[in-house]
Length: 521
Image 1: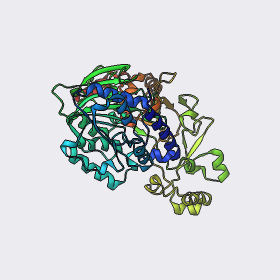
Image 2 (image 1 turned 60 degrees about the horizontal axis):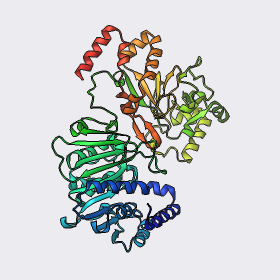
Image 3 (image 1 turned 90 degrees about the vertical axis):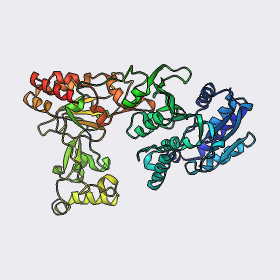
């Protein structure tokens, strides 16, 4: 049941959101918590907290007060000793002060990350928060260093420079909690898989007792305006007991998940991707070969500006540019009619959409002297600011592309787990001389598979067929997932996919030698 105050809060939230630019809200990581989820989290907290202890409630990123509203709905008035919230953005904070003025909520219009933690007697035993989802590149470098030092001082965690602001909220809040205090965090689930999440996971395993992680089905994004897969993380501010097990749930709701499993902290320390749980039965020790044993995997090249550097034949001819300054490049996956690309006599892809990458092999002086129309085109790029962009200005010369020779196999690096074909990612057989942009991962065969493919060209097709027969679950298990069910694979993640069948294609001698190498690992 939605109370009168909650109805007023929802109306206020809608009006304030509409008054603010969407880009600005995304930059500041402001995504409002749905009422149903807020109530669900506070109801869950009520079942975990000691019923005889009065609640001292804190929300370090209050917004308009969704969690405080849920607190009033789920906890009888007499059971709440005090409540406080921080809000740095006065656009939301000032109206929140007016809304909750007569309810006893202390709203502090300040930056939580710069606030001094209270003395022990005034700390909080219930902390619920949906912290701002601000990506690392939106955090000023000096501010980032301040946050890193403060978190290390408070809880010993050394957060990566790639960590988002929500990670720092988690670490800083440690100093605001009472001993045995409970905290529920609504945060992006990506920390469970990405490299910067390692320090977050160490904090959860070593400094507190990690009680429960509920991961929402990524196809059911909690925030309509954010491509984020969400999780609720419950911790208790006390050392983890011996042989502790963490409850992992997935899908549905906190109370009625679709799947659940208890996982030992010992297994969690060994497992790099926590999103495998609760579907995974147990930590498996991989003894067999993986794709990186056979391929050097690289992301396709980043041009710096596709619209400037990638042109059609017609555009090249209209501008009078020398074709020798270009090399063929694959179009985006949506423009590929199939998963096999053949080439013409010159190696150009036989596709309706034929694209070419500007990558002249000459110096600027040579271009100015011998290719005046190309020189003029490059000057246009300079005037448009393209040469000054990050990628371009770190190249010498600025128009020279990074080295990405054609690869016999490329893989799409974005995919969805619910594709009708059952394959979230496409492996494409490239029989052309086209390179690929960073919407693909490029697989370059290594020894012994490279030598064998050279001796037996027919094996290339068999390898490609095998790649497309890889179990979708194995691919999804290595990927990271975002809101709406979108999965992404980085080169190292694709390299970790099991590849035992490729070893079966090797001659007996090479298979034996490879097996010995795998045993060493």
